[in-house]
Figure 1 (cartoon, helix red, strand yellow):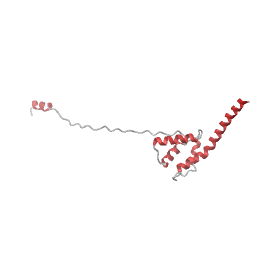
Figure 2 (cartoon, rainbow, N blue to C red; figure 1 turned 90 degrees about the vertical axis):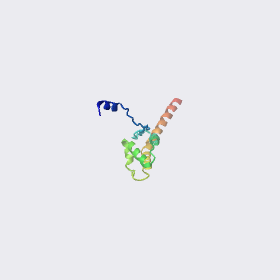
Figure 3 (tube, one colour; figure 1 turned 45 degrees about the vertical axis):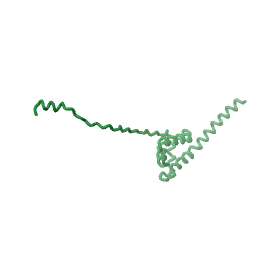
Figure 4 (tube, rainbow, N blue to C red; figure 1 turned 90 degrees about the horizontal axis):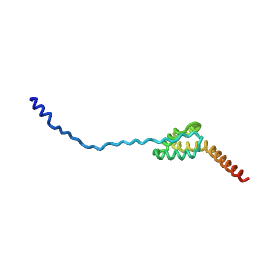
Length: 127
């Protein structure tokens, strides 16, 4: 092939087949973690918060909720895990009962003291 023929061959248009494929979109959902619970705040407020986080994260099984709840416990609240048999189907419910037993009286005492303080201040204003 002569150099002019090679040049002519190089000038021929190249056809490229382009197929349009839809782009793949990957969405990663970021897991929302519950606030840690150490017993210094109201356990019922923590329970309500935990239930909201579980709904958002679609933690559907009690086993999954038990795992996440046990990870959220901190400080003295971790002691609630001691008496819970982790392999029982009722472990999630049992853990909430242990939390209520351990911190429920504390919440009630704190609420009673708050109410007494309000009554005392109201009574002092009356006299």
